[in-house]
Each structure stands twice: as C-alpha cells, then as structure tokens.
Image (tube, rainbow over all chains, first blue to last red; front, top):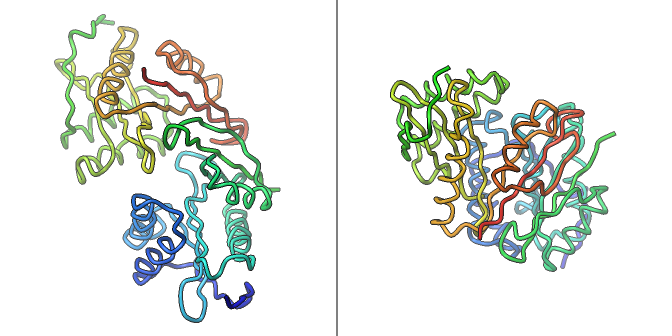
Length: 166
Length: 166
C-alpha cells in the first residue's frame, strides 16, 4: 500500500457526470454496502447533477492524481432551521487510514458553519460490522443521540449520531 | 359544522393530477404547516405522479362528496427491510374529530402489513402546539422511541414515534 497524506488530495465541491462511475466504483470497492445502498449512492449524485443546489445534496470530492479517493454527501434537512445530515461518506480502501475521512468531515463542518448550521446528524447501523464506523464518528466529536432497534432489519438497529456546532 | 362519519368517505389509493391542488388546499387550511412544509407536501404528490411506485411514496386519499377530506403519505424507508415511514397525514379542519385520522392510520397499517412491514415510524415536533398530534399517535398505539433536541429549530425537538406491527 502506498501511504498518502491528505495534502496529496485535491478537494472539489462540484459534481461532474464522470462522478457517477467513480462513485459506483469506490462505493462497491469498500465491500461495505448492499447493492440497494450502492444504487442510492448513485441516485444522490444523479439528483445533484439534474437539479443542482435545489437537490438539497452537497458534495465534497477528494481526488487523488489517478482516481476518486473519497467523498461526502450532506445537506440541510428539509423543514429544519440549521440541521444538516451527512447522507454518505466513503473513502476508497487504498486511501483509508491516512486521515481522509476526518478531513472530509472537517470540510463538511466548515461548509455547514458557513450555512449557519447548528447541528449535524449522521445515521449508522448498531451492528458489530459498524463498530469502526461508530468509533470514527465518536473520534470526530459526534455523540449517539438515539438508537432505534430493528430499524434496518430485525436485529439491525439505527444509531443517530449528532454534533452540535460551537 | 356538519358531523361526518368515516363511512361517508371514499378511500382512493392512487394519486391524480387534481390532487396537487386539493392537497395544497387542505394542508394550507389546517394552518398547521409552514410554507416550506406545504411545498414539501406538494412535492411528494408530484414525485408519485411522475414516478409511480418507484417514487417510494404511497398515498391513501379520503374523498368526501365535494372535496378531499384527508390523506396519508407513507412508504418503505430506503435501505431497510420492513421499516415504513408515515411522511404526512392531514385531515381537513371540517372533517376532524370524526375518526378519519384514525381510519387513515388503520388503512396504512393494513397496507404495510400486506407489504410485510414490521415497523412504522412517524416524526413530529416536541413543541406544545403538537401535543394533540402526539396524543393522537399515542392513541393509535405508537410509542415515542426517541427525541432529538433542537432538531427542527432551537427549542424545537423532533420526536420519533414507532409502532411494532404484530
């Protein structure tokens, strides 16, 4: 594995049509998402390309010299004042463990602050497989706000993490 | 006020283009929703008309002889197995207090059962104005599963109600 530092990535705030293929590729490469989840990930990019800002989806893409290294998708939650949701965050397997996920979270916080956001939410599963994901959110300062048992499936709860911006 | 019984309503399971105007009219008439919320209500109908079942939104409309009396919009939550959300339920002011809301909830439960749903969620505000809404969900058998402080706005929490289907 070639170790990259986050300085080696270029951050991009607009989606391009080539991101449809790039997003599919890195989301599938993580082997973490179901086929239905992969389709949802693509749909969010399609919505952004079709409707622009009106889609309610914002993206931050991290490009390495050769490929998409990771991205985050977030947006203001409709009918709220200042509450944002992180809908998706993915880092390509070969770019993990160099702080890119953390960097994408920080860039998201910066953007949300600029939009006068107060809170950021992110949902994940309570399953064992997602322990590292939950640990990552905790390291980013998020606190578990509630857990809904059997939400995703029987025995697969949803945990809602929340960050209050200062 | 003319007292109606739920037997006087015709229930309809498909959206028609005329529902765009009808929904706007009764959602506005309740004086319960913000202009942004009214637009979201309309968008859900638009999505259903444009994409059919693929929209993920199901509707049950209650027609009186002269107008739309109420409706509910619900759907399976993407990336879950058997979890459904009630996105919207509205009863026109002149048709309230005759059991129509309860009837729409029951018809929704019947549909969700037929889709092999296990759980139904419904979100509402923790504000005083929504006490009667929360009481209504409780009477329908829903339990508060969690409360997210300051979700809708500062001092305006979101309460997530949940019903486990037997």
